[in-house]
Image (cartoon, rainbow, N blue to C red; front, side, top):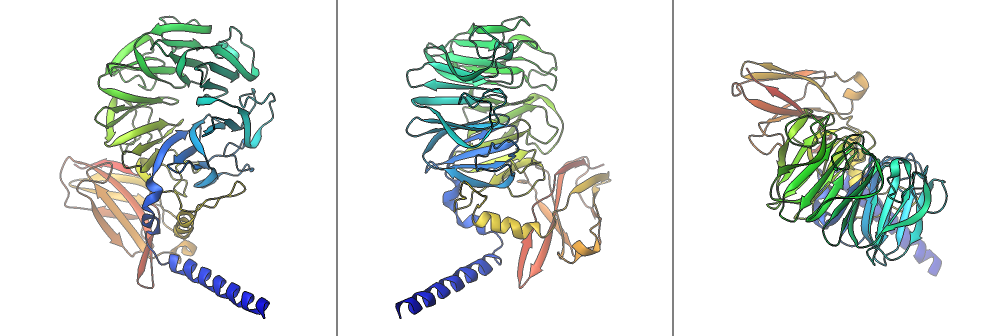
Amino acid sequence: MHRKSHAVRKCISMLLIIAMFISSLLILEPIKAYAASDNNIAVSLGGAHSAVIKADGSLWLCGRNNAGQLGNGTRTNSKSPFKLMDGVKAVSLGSYNSAAIKTDGSLWTWGGNQSGELGNGTTTYSEKPIKIMNGIKAVDMGQSHSAAIKTDDSLWLWGDGAFGMLGNGDTVDSWVPVKIMTGVKEVSLGWNHSAAIKTDGTLWTWGWNYQGQLGNGTNTSSTTPIKIMSGVKCVSLGEAHSAAVKTDGTLWMWGRNYCGQLGNGTTTDSKSPVKIMDGVKAISLSEANSAAIKTDGSLWIWGKNDCGQIGNGTTTNSSRPVKVMTGVKEVCMGDIFCAVIKTDGSLWMWGSNAFGELGDGGSADSYIPKKITLGPTSGSAGGNKSGVASVTQSIKNTLFGVRLTKVKKGKKSFTAKWKKANKKKRKKFSGYQIQYSTSPNFTIGVKTKSTTKKKASKVVIRKLKAKTNYYVRIRRFKKSGGKVVYSDWSNVKRVRTK
């Protein structure tokens, strides 16, 4: 009798779960119901993977996983964020590896390990986190070398030693952490060079210097730390360029500048620091990009923009800082994508998305900031389970996202074109929605036009302002049972009317 009642309760439970799943399919924007998911406190980006720490100390990852850098025991990419571990207070991602500091001060690393950058005494890749050392308060991962600051302010480096970037006077790899200097409060690693700020505010750099990225006025590499300047409060290194913010809020940059990443209006390298702007409180550099947060919370980005990583709705490089958004408290640049956490705790990402590194469930690049909401449930270390967010995305994916191929300007008009859907795909959606705005973030003068002509491959928008820039995007939609479900927005294209 007891077993029978237990079976009945189990059956009822299963029916309830099925009912809840079916009801979730009818909700247009279920992610918005979980406001608590916006409580993010830290973000880090790697070559093509991403990590976020929520206020509860949980660590979430997504993106490329060819070297096991997601830490979930696989080599499978993940387009949606999943929960990897709890009790995390800091995270840093390298090109193909990852590191996290737990609240107990222990350091854990995983992913690629070709030069011993995991610090476990081997060159064997690890698809799961490995404990490396205790008493850590800061960590930073470069392309193939790693650094950590202990609670006693001592700096330790390991991994690739080419060009002297470990700072120990040698050019040999180290598979275990090596103590480099004491009295350090901040460290940053580039692809082949390193930098540290000491507790007295002095900035020291070392490693490769072919483009002048050490900032000492030469192109000579150094295997030991060199003092560059005083009065520094934060530092960030890119592939071959460097930046420092002084205590007076001035931003100084130097090194490689082929895409305008120094922000001084040129594409000429600089061997010495150049003052770029005032009122800066934080900085983050990537392969060929730079981002700064001003004291008023505004975000400025410049440099390379081939995948829309500047976030201004274009793919045009900029050698001058471009204002992207306001209300920002933290920024991190990946190789060719970007992420910020706003003052309200919300996470926004944009740029390249080839491996799902934006965490939106798709793989289309985004030329403008896109809000990313983590699912309310966790994925285990063995799989990708991101809650309602992933369920919603799976529904959207059945709509076959569309991509704009061209937007042609006309007299007070434009023509937006896309690839015509085949017969099989046309059975799965009801029409197209085109949206256009004079703002790259689609916040000003936003208008939409819908069509149920599923064979359509273009639309003409008329009665616009002459000689005006418009930003255009498109998505498919499906009507079912009185509800409308949309695919993700396409790429954004800019057009200037005649």
